[in-house]
Length: 369
Image 1 (tube, rainbow, N blue to C red):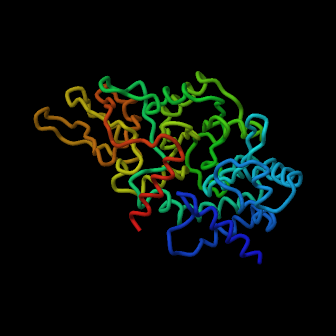
Image 2 (image 1 turned 120 degrees about the vertical axis):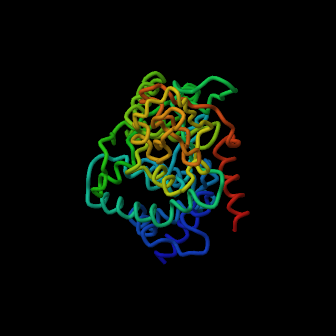
Image 3 (image 1 turned 90 degrees about the vertical axis):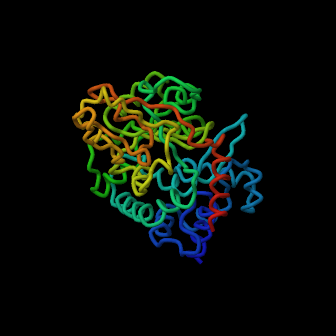
C-alpha cells in the first residue's frame, strides 16, 4: 500500500511537461526513495490530489473528502514545512504542488547540514544525472530554460525586447527575492562542489514564489538596483545567467556554474548547445581588433572559442563556433582588444508564459514519440 501511494504521487509529478523519467521506463529507485524521505504516506496521498496550478481550499476539500476546516489546517501545515506552495490572493488562500525539479530544490534552501540532507542530495543527483537531464533537455526543440546575455556588450541594431536582457527582465519584475543556490548546496553536501562561487544569496526569484520564500525565511527582498549590481558581478566572475524560457511570469534568474548547476550541466552534454537553450544573441568578432590573448578560450565553458592562425593578418586570432555559442557574452567582458560584441538574432519564438511553455514542450514530446 505504501509503495502504491508513492507511485501515485510519482505519476502525478510525471504528468508535468517536464516530468520525472523517459516514457516507457520504470520510475528511478532514487526518485521514489526521495519521495519517501520527503513525505509520509498520508502526506503523499493528499498531495497527489493537488495540481500544478493554484486551487482553492473548497475545491481541494472535495477531492480529498475532508471538511474545509480540516483541509485548511492540513494544507497550511504542509505549506509551513515547504512541502507545497501557498499563495494568498484577494484574501483567499490557494495551494499547488511543486513540479518534480522544484520539489527537490526546496529542502536544500536550508543551510544547515544533516545526514538526512546529505542522503537526499545524493539521491537527487542520482536522479538528475540518470533521468532528469534527458527528460528536461532531450526530445524537444523548446527548452525549459534560456540564457541571459551581458547587457553592456550588446551591439546596436534590431528591436531588443525587455525580457531578452537582464536589465529589461529585472526591471519588469515585482517582489524580487534573493535565495541560496540549491544546485551548489546539493553538490556541497555530497562533497563535489569544485568552485568558489557562493551558495548563499545567489539566485533571484520573483512574484508569488519570491514572497513564499520570504515567508518561509529562505530569502530576503532586494531592490532592482541591488539585483542588477549583483548579477553583473556574477557575470564578471564567470557565472552564466539562466532563466525560465518565457516572456512573462518568470520564476527565477539563476547564476550558474558548470560544476554544480543542473541546467548548465545538462546543456554541456550537447554537441550543439546553441540549439537547445540559447539567448537571442551570438558573438561577433572584429578580427582586426583581436589581439589573440586567448582569454575567451579559457573563459568559455561551452568550448565555443578557439585560436586560429589568420594568414592575412599573419597572427593568431580568436574564432567562435556558433553551434556552441549560446550568446551569454561572458567572453566579451574580458576581451583585451575589445574585439567581441553580442549581436541580436532571432533564434525562435519565446513562449509568452510558463503555461504556454509547458504546452509547447508537451506538444513537441508528443510529436517525437
